[in-house]
Image 1 (cartoon, rainbow, N blue to C red):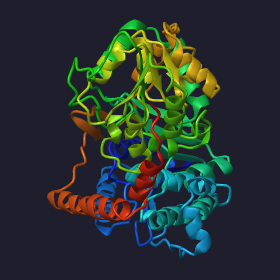
Image 2: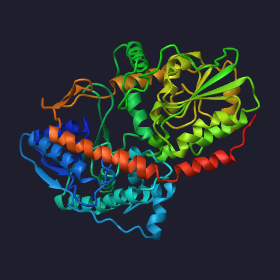
Image 3: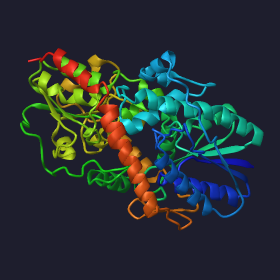
Image 4: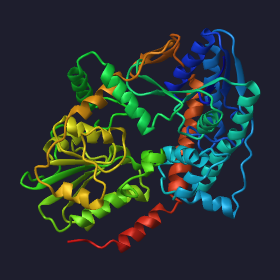
Length: 505
């Protein structure tokens, strides 16, 4: 079997270790294995190096080479083109880079390269509405990379007569071309993913993106039907682990720094208290597809409409707990949320960096509202009625309210003593994210101890750490903070919003 294993970056862990393990398994099975790595030359842009900085690129390539050197057996290594020509930002091209929906809809040879480029851009910048000064230039680089990789992969697959493809995640611009081309060529694909703390938490999706609702639900039901252990024990560990700050499906804990037992000032148990847990909306915007098919255009619109519809009800208090992941985000979509309390007398906004305890807020509220974060299903487990206003994997398992109209959402929020729904859905989610993955050969370790491929741990040398730190500091401080945001249009939009926003008292 001719197998293509895609390893475009050496910077991400445990991605590198997992993909090396997949390559080693293919080699061990006697497959004709080709590992495609990134050429990383001029013009390239990817989710880990959106600006194509040479320092970051050099460290990435060095780590990839170090990983390949640890493989045992025969394989071929092929790099993607050394240089990616970046098209000029003419009027037509530039207009594409300023329109979020236009770029998400942009395709090349039937491949959704625009959605992938958008995902890579906002994953680093958090600029979901493309307000940044550098947004057109950066998106142009990311898009050009994907546009060039589509025909390159198609030709490579056909010339080499590839029988199987193995890649990671598939969402961003360095992965999407290979994923979609393979699907178009009817080649079986293993999409690797990781979610959890231990090496046993590897997920392998066949021919579909890991974010696909149907696939996730099938995985969840399969895990539920075939598990023979104590589900209650697994769920208890999972939800208490999350409550204590454990990392699941993410890269950091968001309750660190919060004060246990602390509720916001002015909390009154006599009122109908609604806790609204918003999400890092840019993360969902980056996925696209079904995640764009929502009741509201975005969370900002949802909050504005809900607040306006409930402004005349003095007994209802809306407590918006801004996601801690938004505490350092200053684009207008995040800033507008902080202004809601100035406009509506029955709205309280808890900033992302507040020490107010998210879980004590959940325990004390009457009803929880979410947009797709795990808090929506955690609320169910802890005995709270939960209203879901976004899209997520647990929307169809009967444990959360899923209003289909704005009026229905308002009615549910107004309802005192709203009934809780069956907890079974929360048990399914806990079981899936705790036991739905699997162990794979050659891959070991944990988040706390680090991950290993064949008992080897890949760490940057001192010089690589220095170069990487310099590159990332330049990217985050100079390019993103000073130029992209500081000289972008977000501040102007906020000023205009303040000027036109009329208080509802």
